[in-house]
Structure formats: structure tokens, C-alpha cells
Image 1 (tube, rainbow, N blue to C red):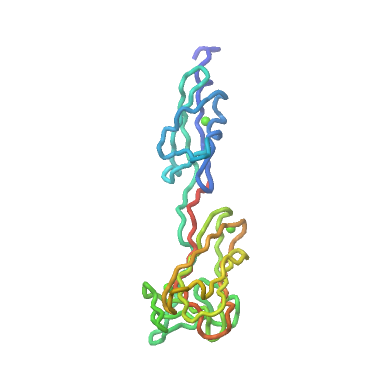
Image 2: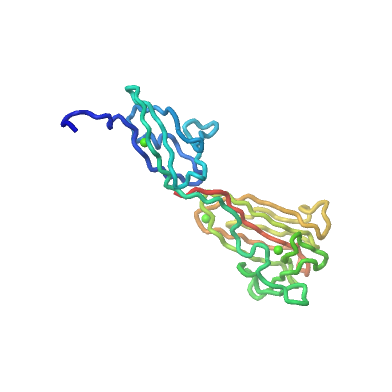
Length: 259
Ligand SMILES: [Ca+2]
Ligand SMILES: [Ca+2]
Ligand SMILES: [Ca+2]
């Protein structure tokens, strides 16, 4: 290299390390920030990087690009084209069911019996110490689960349940709580609490047109906060021996990018 000679390097786009979080979107400005000021985008050279509809300059990464790379081409003030490589320094989590023993099938119903009397279903906290909960075999009282697995009675003998399980959902990350549940003589309210807020109150109206033993699926959307969240299920109905029959309670998280 001859001293004092100017080279094109000063007029080239510079490579980037891109860190995306939450929804996997980034702004084009983040890639151009270290390029010559006049650089104008010609193309992003990867079909898996797509501009978000209605948001000019905002792009969405395909999950397969996590840990990978793509290139983009810009045009300089002097008309030359320059291509830079972008490393995607982020991880992608597709999401999924996060609760433990969500189907109440971890605990066995003893042979010859129709239900197990427990201090708590494994993985769940009983907020009423000294009381018990009942995990019931499919078929008891005519309540047959679609997959033949156990269900949970929201009234023990006697008294409504108050159980909880914690999970730390990332702040801003969406999730869906889903109940697979049958009426089974349930009365009054079954209150669903997430992160200290009542997200729904399940009652007989949710089972309109269904018999006592037919399962239905109820879903509630929630969003993560900065702290660890707790899902709490409280039967506030009159104290008796027969509550709602829950086949499963799931917490299904959305996909999520982590920088
Ligand atoms: Ca750049
Ligand atoms: Ca079950
Ligand atoms: Ca959280």
C-alpha cells in the first residue's frame, strides 16, 4: 500500500453484529449506523429477512437465522455498491407448555380406588395448608377424559381448592393459559389468577350446552412482567364434595428472541 493513497475501504459498508430480542424485529438504521452517511439500501440479500408490513425500515428475522448471518447491499454517494455481512447474535425459543404436572397425571391413583387424596398435586402448591386435594381417575362419576388420564376435582372433601404454580415469563412475552375442564357438578366461581390479577372467573355459564361430563377448552391470554409470575386456581364456590373437573391446565408461551 502506497503511503497517502486513499482506498475504497473508507467508502464501504461495514459488517454488523445484530442483537434482536422479543419479536425478532430490527430497524434498518441499526445496520447502516456504522456505514458511510450517504449509504442507501439497495437490497437485503436474504428472503428470510422481510420488511414488516406498514412499518418501513423495520425487518423481521426468520427463526432459522438465529446464530446465522445474512448480507445487505448499499449504494454509496459515488454510485458504487458495497455489501456487508450481518451476524445474528441472538437465540430463538419457539415457546411451548411450561407448567409441571399440568395434566395432574404425575400422581398415581391407588389400585382399586377412584381418586387419590393428596396434600397437593406434585409440582403445585396448596395455599390452604392442612387441606387436601383429590386427583381422580378417568371415568369416576362418568367424567371420562379424552386421553383416559387423571383429572383434578376443584372441590375436595369438602372445600374448594386453592393451588398455585409459579413460572417466570419474560417481561412482554405473551402466553396462553388453557383449561381442559368439565362441569362435574361445579357450582360458583373458579377464579383464575395470574401475576396477582384475576384473568377469568369460570362458572356454569362457560359450559352452556354441555352436560356434566363433557370437557371444554377455555383459554386466557396473559403477558409476562418483570417479576416471577404465579398462576393460582381458586374454587370460591360453596363448600361441597363436587367441583369442576380439570383434565389439564397449561401455560403455552409464545416464541421469543433473546439477545
Ligand atoms: Ca453496517
Ligand atoms: Ca389429565
Ligand atoms: Ca416475569
